[in-house]
Amino acid sequence: MIIGITTTLNEADGFQRVNVEYINRVAATGAAPVLLTPMRGGAEANRALARQVIDTVDALVITGGGDVHPRYYVPDPAKNRDALNMDDVAALGCGSASHCRSTGAPVPFCGHNASDEAFRQAMGGPPGPDEVTTLDGRNVLTDPERPAVPCLSDLLAVSEDRDGFELELARLAHERRIPCLGICRGMQVMNVALGGSLYRDLYNCGVTERGHRQEPPYDRTTDTVAIAAGSLLATVLGAAGAFDVNSMHHQGIDHVAAGLLVSARSGDRVVEAVEDPHLPFYLGVQWHPEYLDRCRGLFNALAAAGERFAAQRKATVSQG
Image (cartoon, rainbow, N blue to C red; front, side, top):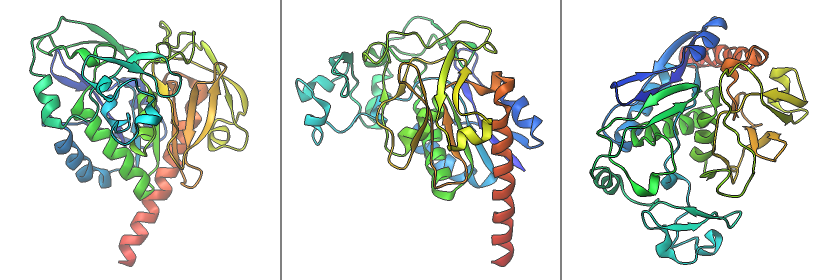
Protein backbone atom coordinates (compact mmCIF):
# COMPACT_ATOMS: atom_id res chain seq x y z
CA MET A 1 0.00 0.00 0.00
CA ILE A 2 1.43 3.35 -1.09
CA ILE A 3 1.02 6.70 0.63
CA GLY A 4 2.13 9.70 -1.41
CA ILE A 5 3.85 12.58 0.42
CA THR A 6 4.21 16.01 -1.16
CA THR A 7 7.50 17.92 -1.02
CA THR A 8 8.98 21.41 -0.57
CA LEU A 9 11.38 23.06 -3.03
CA ASN A 10 14.70 24.16 -1.52
CA GLU A 11 15.26 26.89 -4.11
CA ALA A 12 18.83 27.95 -3.35
CA ASP A 13 20.16 24.40 -3.64
CA GLY A 14 17.82 23.31 -6.40
CA PHE A 15 16.25 20.21 -4.90
CA GLN A 16 12.91 18.98 -3.60
CA ARG A 17 12.93 17.79 -0.02
CA VAL A 18 10.61 16.45 2.62
CA ASN A 19 11.18 16.33 6.36
CA VAL A 20 12.14 12.86 7.51
CA GLU A 21 9.45 13.01 10.22
CA TYR A 22 6.74 12.66 7.56
CA ILE A 23 8.48 9.68 6.00
CA ASN A 24 9.08 7.98 9.35
CA ARG A 25 5.47 8.37 10.45
CA VAL A 26 4.15 6.89 7.22
CA ALA A 27 6.70 4.06 7.21
CA ALA A 28 5.82 3.20 10.82
CA THR A 29 2.29 2.33 9.67
CA GLY A 30 3.64 -0.34 7.32
CA ALA A 31 2.80 1.68 4.22
CA ALA A 32 5.36 2.54 1.55
CA PRO A 33 6.07 6.30 1.51
CA VAL A 34 6.50 7.73 -2.01
CA LEU A 35 7.43 11.34 -2.62
CA LEU A 36 5.27 13.37 -5.00
CA THR A 37 7.01 16.43 -6.41
CA PRO A 38 5.90 19.26 -8.66
CA MET A 39 7.98 20.22 -11.67
CA ARG A 40 9.04 23.46 -13.29
CA GLY A 41 6.57 24.72 -15.85
CA GLY A 42 3.80 26.61 -14.08
CA ALA A 43 0.45 25.83 -12.54
CA GLU A 44 -1.29 24.23 -15.50
CA ALA A 45 1.58 21.84 -16.21
CA ASN A 46 1.50 20.78 -12.58
CA ARG A 47 -2.24 20.30 -12.56
CA ALA A 48 -1.73 17.91 -15.46
CA LEU A 49 1.04 16.16 -13.53
CA ALA A 50 -1.27 15.73 -10.54
CA ARG A 51 -3.83 14.05 -12.77
CA GLN A 52 -1.14 11.62 -13.90
CA VAL A 53 0.13 10.62 -10.45
CA ILE A 54 -3.02 10.60 -8.30
CA ASP A 55 -4.00 7.05 -9.24
CA THR A 56 -0.58 5.70 -8.28
CA VAL A 57 -1.25 6.20 -4.55
CA ASP A 58 -3.69 4.66 -2.09
CA ALA A 59 -3.58 7.61 0.30
CA LEU A 60 -2.07 11.07 0.38
CA VAL A 61 -0.25 13.37 2.82
CA ILE A 62 -0.17 17.02 1.77
CA THR A 63 2.65 18.44 3.84
CA GLY A 64 3.46 21.80 5.38
CA GLY A 65 5.47 24.50 3.67
CA GLY A 66 5.08 27.90 2.02
CA ASP A 67 1.96 29.99 1.55
CA VAL A 68 -0.71 29.44 -1.09
CA HIS A 69 -0.87 32.27 -3.64
CA PRO A 70 -3.82 34.58 -2.79
CA ARG A 71 -5.09 34.36 -6.37
CA TYR A 72 -6.60 30.99 -5.46
CA TYR A 73 -8.76 32.19 -2.59
CA VAL A 74 -9.51 35.92 -2.96
CA PRO A 75 -12.87 36.22 -4.74
CA ASP A 76 -13.21 37.93 -8.09
CA PRO A 77 -13.55 41.65 -7.27
CA ALA A 78 -15.82 42.34 -10.24
CA LYS A 79 -18.37 39.86 -8.89
CA ASN A 80 -17.76 40.14 -5.15
CA ARG A 81 -17.10 43.79 -4.44
CA ASP A 82 -19.65 44.00 -1.63
CA ALA A 83 -18.46 40.78 -0.01
CA LEU A 84 -14.86 41.97 -0.18
CA ASN A 85 -15.74 45.30 1.45
CA MET A 86 -13.14 47.00 -0.73
CA ASP A 87 -12.60 50.75 -0.82
CA ASP A 88 -12.08 50.39 -4.55
CA VAL A 89 -11.80 47.51 -6.98
CA ALA A 90 -8.41 48.90 -8.01
CA ALA A 91 -7.20 48.20 -4.48
CA LEU A 92 -6.54 44.64 -5.60
CA GLY A 93 -3.64 45.89 -7.70
CA CYS A 94 -0.17 44.54 -7.07
CA GLY A 95 1.49 46.14 -4.05
CA SER A 96 -1.60 48.06 -2.94
CA ALA A 97 -3.45 47.81 0.34
CA SER A 98 -6.99 46.68 0.96
CA HIS A 99 -8.93 45.11 3.81
CA CYS A 100 -9.45 41.64 5.14
CA ARG A 101 -12.90 40.71 3.85
CA SER A 102 -13.94 39.19 7.18
CA THR A 103 -12.41 41.46 9.82
CA GLY A 104 -12.02 44.71 7.88
CA ALA A 105 -8.39 45.04 8.97
CA PRO A 106 -6.11 46.72 6.38
CA VAL A 107 -3.83 44.13 4.77
CA PRO A 108 -1.84 43.99 1.53
CA PHE A 109 -3.58 42.21 -1.30
CA CYS A 110 -2.30 40.85 -4.57
CA GLY A 111 -3.73 41.01 -8.05
CA HIS A 112 -5.17 37.57 -7.37
CA ASN A 113 -6.83 37.02 -10.69
CA ALA A 114 -3.73 37.54 -12.79
CA SER A 115 -3.08 34.85 -15.38
CA ASP A 116 -0.17 32.45 -15.03
CA GLU A 117 1.60 34.45 -17.76
CA ALA A 118 1.10 37.73 -15.89
CA PHE A 119 2.48 36.11 -12.75
CA ARG A 120 5.53 34.86 -14.66
CA GLN A 121 6.11 38.38 -15.97
CA ALA A 122 5.90 39.78 -12.46
CA MET A 123 8.37 37.11 -11.36
CA GLY A 124 10.76 38.35 -14.05
CA GLY A 125 11.60 41.55 -12.20
CA PRO A 126 14.85 42.47 -10.44
CA PRO A 127 16.24 39.91 -7.98
CA GLY A 128 15.37 40.24 -4.33
CA PRO A 129 17.67 39.68 -1.32
CA ASP A 130 18.55 36.26 0.07
CA GLU A 131 16.19 35.22 2.82
CA VAL A 132 16.08 32.31 5.23
CA THR A 133 12.56 31.02 5.79
CA THR A 134 11.55 28.33 8.28
CA LEU A 135 9.09 25.93 6.68
CA ASP A 136 7.61 23.06 8.73
CA GLY A 137 10.60 23.07 11.05
CA ARG A 138 13.50 23.40 8.58
CA ASN A 139 15.31 26.45 7.26
CA VAL A 140 15.04 27.10 3.54
CA LEU A 141 17.22 29.65 1.75
CA THR A 142 15.28 31.50 -0.93
CA ASP A 143 16.99 31.47 -4.30
CA PRO A 144 19.03 34.69 -4.74
CA GLU A 145 17.74 34.75 -8.34
CA ARG A 146 14.14 34.78 -7.16
CA PRO A 147 12.68 38.21 -7.95
CA ALA A 148 10.90 40.32 -5.37
CA VAL A 149 7.16 40.64 -6.00
CA PRO A 150 5.82 43.47 -3.81
CA CYS A 151 2.31 42.07 -3.44
CA LEU A 152 3.76 38.79 -2.08
CA SER A 153 6.21 40.42 0.31
CA ASP A 154 4.37 39.29 3.45
CA LEU A 155 4.06 35.69 2.27
CA LEU A 156 6.45 32.76 2.62
CA ALA A 157 7.91 30.75 -0.27
CA VAL A 158 5.02 31.13 -2.72
CA SER A 159 5.36 28.62 -5.56
CA GLU A 160 2.97 28.49 -8.51
CA ASP A 161 4.30 25.03 -9.40
CA ARG A 162 3.55 23.60 -5.98
CA ASP A 163 0.19 25.38 -5.73
CA GLY A 164 -0.98 24.00 -9.07
CA PHE A 165 0.17 20.49 -8.18
CA GLU A 166 -1.17 20.24 -4.64
CA LEU A 167 -4.49 22.02 -5.19
CA GLU A 168 -5.26 19.57 -7.98
CA LEU A 169 -4.13 16.61 -5.86
CA ALA A 170 -6.44 17.74 -3.04
CA ARG A 171 -9.36 18.26 -5.42
CA LEU A 172 -8.88 14.87 -7.07
CA ALA A 173 -8.46 13.07 -3.75
CA HIS A 174 -11.79 14.51 -2.65
CA GLU A 175 -13.49 13.69 -5.94
CA ARG A 176 -12.18 10.11 -6.03
CA ARG A 177 -12.51 9.47 -2.28
CA ILE A 178 -8.79 8.84 -1.88
CA PRO A 179 -7.83 9.14 1.82
CA CYS A 180 -6.06 12.45 2.39
CA LEU A 181 -4.32 13.99 5.41
CA GLY A 182 -3.37 17.66 5.16
CA ILE A 183 -0.82 19.11 7.56
CA CYS A 184 -0.50 22.86 8.20
CA ARG A 185 -0.26 24.27 4.65
CA GLY A 186 -1.78 20.96 3.55
CA MET A 187 -4.98 21.65 5.50
CA GLN A 188 -5.16 25.11 3.93
CA VAL A 189 -4.64 23.60 0.46
CA MET A 190 -7.53 21.17 1.04
CA ASN A 191 -9.81 24.04 2.07
CA VAL A 192 -8.84 26.28 -0.85
CA ALA A 193 -9.12 23.40 -3.35
CA LEU A 194 -12.78 22.99 -2.39
CA GLY A 195 -13.58 26.72 -2.56
CA GLY A 196 -12.64 27.98 0.89
CA SER A 197 -10.43 30.96 1.72
CA LEU A 198 -7.58 31.89 4.04
CA TYR A 199 -6.54 34.71 6.30
CA ARG A 200 -3.41 36.00 4.64
CA ASP A 201 -1.88 36.65 8.06
CA LEU A 202 -3.67 35.97 11.34
CA TYR A 203 -2.15 38.95 13.15
CA ASN A 204 -2.45 41.48 10.32
CA CYS A 205 -6.04 40.43 9.65
CA GLY A 206 -6.85 41.14 13.28
CA VAL A 207 -7.84 37.53 14.02
CA THR A 208 -5.57 37.09 17.01
CA GLU A 209 -2.86 38.84 19.00
CA ARG A 210 -1.22 35.52 19.79
CA GLY A 211 1.73 34.19 17.89
CA HIS A 212 1.26 30.77 16.30
CA ARG A 213 4.87 30.16 15.21
CA GLN A 214 6.80 28.49 18.01
CA GLU A 215 10.53 28.08 18.27
CA PRO A 216 12.10 24.59 18.26
CA PRO A 217 12.01 21.91 19.51
CA TYR A 218 8.84 21.05 17.64
CA ASP A 219 8.07 17.92 19.61
CA ARG A 220 7.13 20.36 22.39
CA THR A 221 3.50 21.49 22.63
CA THR A 222 2.76 25.21 22.95
CA ASP A 223 -0.96 25.47 22.20
CA THR A 224 -4.18 23.76 23.21
CA VAL A 225 -7.01 23.06 20.80
CA ALA A 226 -10.56 21.95 21.47
CA ILE A 227 -11.49 18.84 19.47
CA ALA A 228 -15.15 18.30 18.62
CA ALA A 229 -16.69 15.19 20.15
CA GLY A 230 -17.94 12.72 17.56
CA SER A 231 -15.57 13.96 14.86
CA LEU A 232 -13.25 11.72 12.87
CA LEU A 233 -10.37 13.62 14.45
CA ALA A 234 -11.57 12.74 17.95
CA THR A 235 -11.96 9.12 16.93
CA VAL A 236 -8.49 8.67 15.44
CA LEU A 237 -6.72 10.55 18.24
CA GLY A 238 -8.83 8.94 20.95
CA ALA A 239 -9.44 12.36 22.47
CA ALA A 240 -12.15 15.01 22.49
CA GLY A 241 -12.01 18.39 24.18
CA ALA A 242 -8.69 19.93 25.18
CA PHE A 243 -5.69 18.55 23.30
CA ASP A 244 -2.14 19.96 23.37
CA VAL A 245 -0.39 20.57 20.05
CA ASN A 246 2.57 22.41 18.54
CA SER A 247 2.06 25.50 16.36
CA MET A 248 4.06 26.62 13.32
CA HIS A 249 1.92 28.87 11.09
CA HIS A 250 1.01 32.50 10.43
CA GLN A 251 -2.02 31.95 8.20
CA GLY A 252 -5.30 30.19 8.87
CA ILE A 253 -8.65 29.26 7.40
CA ASP A 254 -11.11 32.12 6.94
CA HIS A 255 -14.18 30.80 5.10
CA VAL A 256 -14.52 27.04 5.42
CA ALA A 257 -15.21 25.27 2.12
CA ALA A 258 -18.69 23.87 1.59
CA GLY A 259 -18.81 20.27 2.75
CA LEU A 260 -16.03 20.62 5.32
CA LEU A 261 -16.68 20.80 9.04
CA VAL A 262 -14.43 22.39 11.64
CA SER A 263 -13.36 19.66 14.06
CA ALA A 264 -10.91 21.66 16.20
CA ARG A 265 -10.22 25.27 17.17
CA SER A 266 -7.60 26.96 19.28
CA GLY A 267 -8.46 29.11 22.28
CA ASP A 268 -8.37 32.23 20.10
CA ARG A 269 -10.87 30.59 17.71
CA VAL A 270 -8.41 29.85 14.90
CA VAL A 271 -9.50 26.83 12.87
CA GLU A 272 -7.15 23.97 13.77
CA ALA A 273 -8.76 21.04 11.92
CA VAL A 274 -11.32 20.40 9.19
CA GLU A 275 -12.80 17.21 7.79
CA ASP A 276 -15.42 15.99 5.35
CA PRO A 277 -17.88 13.80 7.29
CA HIS A 278 -19.16 12.29 4.03
CA LEU A 279 -15.82 10.74 3.06
CA PRO A 280 -13.96 7.91 4.80
CA PHE A 281 -10.87 10.05 5.42
CA TYR A 282 -10.47 13.64 4.25
CA LEU A 283 -8.94 15.42 7.22
CA GLY A 284 -6.60 18.36 7.72
CA VAL A 285 -4.89 19.68 10.85
CA GLN A 286 -3.16 23.03 11.29
CA TRP A 287 -0.47 21.75 13.63
CA HIS A 288 2.40 19.36 12.83
CA PRO A 289 1.51 15.86 14.08
CA GLU A 290 4.60 14.31 12.49
CA TYR A 291 6.62 15.67 15.43
CA LEU A 292 4.27 14.40 18.14
CA ASP A 293 4.05 10.79 19.29
CA ARG A 294 0.60 11.46 20.73
CA CYS A 295 -0.63 12.07 17.16
CA ARG A 296 0.52 8.79 15.62
CA GLY A 297 -3.12 7.75 15.46
CA LEU A 298 -3.62 10.20 12.58
CA PHE A 299 -1.12 8.33 10.43
CA ASN A 300 -2.36 4.90 11.52
CA ALA A 301 -5.91 5.86 10.59
CA LEU A 302 -4.78 7.26 7.23
CA ALA A 303 -2.96 4.02 6.46
CA ALA A 304 -5.98 1.93 7.47
CA ALA A 305 -8.19 4.04 5.21
CA GLY A 306 -5.63 3.63 2.43
CA GLU A 307 -5.71 -0.16 2.83
CA ARG A 308 -9.50 -0.15 2.49
CA PHE A 309 -9.34 2.15 -0.52
CA ALA A 310 -6.71 -0.05 -2.22
CA ALA A 311 -8.84 -3.16 -1.65
CA GLN A 312 -11.95 -1.46 -3.04
CA ARG A 313 -10.06 -0.23 -6.09
CA LYS A 314 -8.65 -3.71 -6.71
CA ALA A 315 -12.10 -5.25 -6.43
CA THR A 316 -13.51 -2.70 -8.86
CA VAL A 317 -10.77 -3.44 -11.39
CA SER A 318 -11.34 -7.19 -11.04
CA GLN A 319 -15.06 -6.81 -11.64
CA GLY A 320 -14.39 -4.62 -14.68
